[in-house]
Image (cartoon, rainbow, N blue to C red; front, side, top):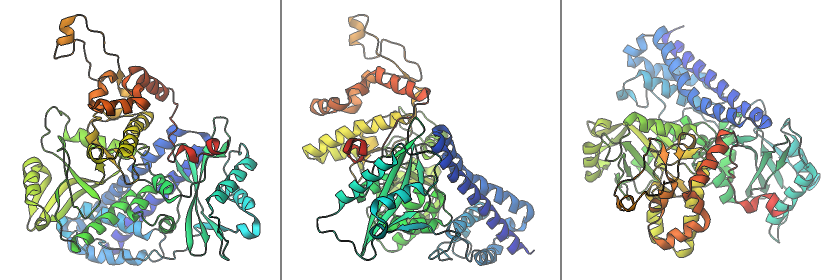
Length: 574
């Protein structure tokens, strides 16, 4: 076998091993749900994320061992790429295989060769109409089979090991909820049907049936959350059909689903049909294919740069002490670099900050932590960088940037969805908006605590408001696990001198936290503080935090539902 074919086959073998393990992890999500093994489900998600880098490094090591000449002669790679393309004809995950190829090639090649002849700057193989061993979705016909019968067939088709607590009740509730969503003049068209993806979507303590209603030219989301109860039975919790509810379920601030996909592009196409405002980047990421999401985002960034004129500029808001943040107004993202030196009183190291971001990547984000895309060696045209931003980059992050001809190369960067900082939002909000945001600010802290996350720095500038009016935390340099914290009450002062002292009169160990002192971090304005206390006064007591900590230590994972309480059948019909 010649070098070109050998290297191309080694890369494809590495990818096939990766995707085989990816599907194995995803299938284990079903077993974890059936056994209520939530700890293992969390571990599976983490291992699946980390597995990609392991397979890439294994492949790089094999190529450098068996074909050492490819590291010395970059000109071999255009031919390797051509041979690799030939091997992808009819491959069911060709777009992901191209990304895997890029990951391997970029480990071997110098960045001077990150160009179209050497790596995949755009897809080479179409993923439309790929035919797997089974169809990606199944179709059901309520007009001929009856609506309740269709629900029964759908719910029993996934072969879960658990029995339903009350299947007759659940199908009746589903039928009732669906009929309530119909308009008064609704009429079934000849093509009226329910289409459901072939695999359940597993995340946290729930499994989701993901489908769509087809009626004429209308495609409507159709999501059924299934819960596992403590006695081992399962039941239907809701029917989600509103675009907003489904978009929040697939939000960038939530953990990735465990879902077994033979043809991932077919799943993305299906999801895009019911969430047309969602980015393909977000959809690939939510399916656990975050490396593919990175590839698509980078292509979109380069395309946008060619078709826009605005400049990268310093992001509005309070300047960060650890991260330098910039944005481009015409793109809904922010770009974050770790500074060379942190402003006092921040004392963390660069590696500690990177570890915090990795923690968030691997953790259950419960809709309250923004996901990030992490890149190395990103090149941006110097002419597109505002002079003020360039000055800050060269002064505060010189170790992370390098000028190469007409490009600024950023050695390490995080990219997040742009949100309105909570402090800015509150400054412009109407009274009802303000009240809602203050309540959700507290709910965000509660949800994070239930997921074993202590935010650390809970200033409002570290939280953002999404387009769905949800409050999300995005400053990670001080987060830690709740179980690592020691929540204490402030001891009473011993005398008048203690009361008047500028420094605490009590000892403070490294992991000590005093919730009674949170007030100034939350709200200085007494009216806002009173609004906050109406719903969240207990967040300023050590008792509440210690109860949360104890629940986590005893294995009682909090229930965090990614949809409103009034959607749940137990409150709507129970």
